Image (cartoon, rainbow, N blue to C red; front, side, top):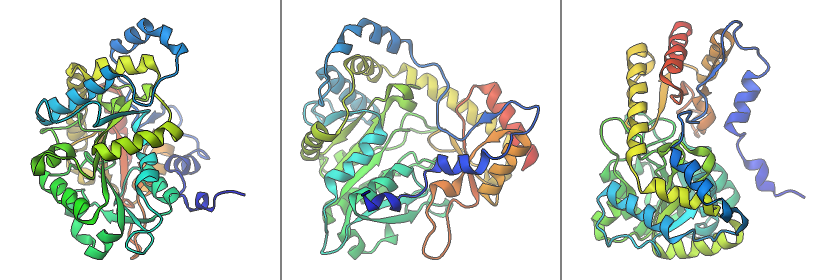
Length: 396
């Protein structure tokens, strides 16, 4: 009765974490602190509540898949400012579409772009290893074969495109890339983005770049895929990017994001979303437009995360292979065995972290690029993060 692909899904990472930790009580006498989930705890901008209250009368109206002109214009304006795109490069009517949080959008896009066969074989959906778990589920339900490219310290925590042969790329229907990366915090260089775009056009696959952490960076703003595409030929053929307010504006509960890029793909994606996608409510669209039009909150949150990374650097030092993430708010710490370390931290110090193996796939040679690591989310206020990290270094 059930779709057999359901049984091909990996166990959800946070279900695995609950199975690992919940049978055990946390350390007695200590307040539990979760560093397992990338769930920002900073107060969201007041503009959200203000705008939603002002537009409360619109809760009684069905929203449109396209969103509103103000939303699309604000999203296009953000991309233009952030990536130095000219005023006429992005057309809000052709290049932008809202999505209800990027996870749903990232998953649904595979239904659009993965055919039953490519180059006479089962198509490939390519992704970094480790990666955001939604990419894996999207590949499974599209009927594709997953291909995981290790993204390790040796490759700058980005996938090495030369690991794929020309025959592999010919079978590829979709390539998910995340920059800044979740969980490792690496960023894609302009050269890597351009190389991926050239491959996408040569072999007619779609490059989807998850840029949800693009506004949270350490020293330098990461390059973007639309920026790279514009630098090649001024077009966005075969390229889609996803952005979200969840991290940029500390508003994960609003479920607000957008997809931008290839206008032909956006047109078809709009049709698909008319049938299968959720629409963002009008009050959320108006609030989102305000946030995408104002970069001051993003600067404030980015500064706060940079402070938390400074704290981590002071407390951890050179232990666990510590390095400052170039983007995002996760630490990727080498503790020898991530699962054992996560259990020990919970039982001995009431700290909850995510084993790196829960975001990774075991390769054909038996190696798992996340096995030795834990992912630590710096998503609390300064004092809480300092307390948690001091507990961590005492027990590991």
